[in-house]
Length: 200
Image (cartoon, rainbow, N blue to C red; front, top):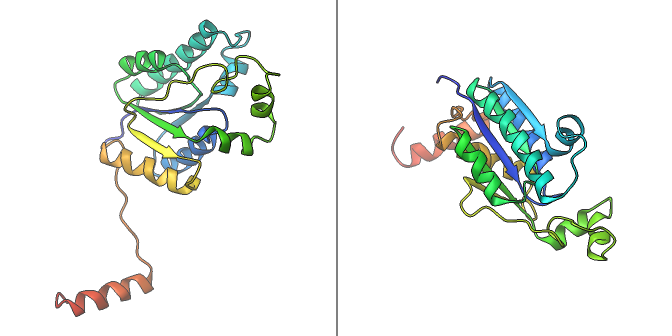
């Protein structure tokens, strides 16, 4: 199977697991022979979008910059993985239009779970009004209407989420399916069942 570039775009609230899943998927895709680049929202802000604030205009500019880099990588047969809150649906859809193969992954997680997990205490401060324009609290987050993948990071393990994402990429023929390798015990059990059914 000829490898082609695509963009895997993780969106979701702060703390929903976007970066964690992006790195795990990167590891899996590299193991399968893909060229992969991860664009993490926080890292991009430090290097590519330094000086931008958190107004809607600045947020849109930041996401458009990430989208432009993803577009360049994708057309050169690299898998671009973006992990950014990207709160506004219109901008995500605008980027989708620019990229031939765009796979949106919505990291869905309830606000109360995010607040519990939040080691920096940002949600607590935002809910108390100490931080303004915090996405999901007093600044909007527009969830995707029909993403290619939804992972429920509040109640499933990272491994389960990654498996769901990889399966969808296989279904879309963006990633080649790998052969299932059975252990000796599994092979023996499979043979026993086939014999009982009269197939062996």
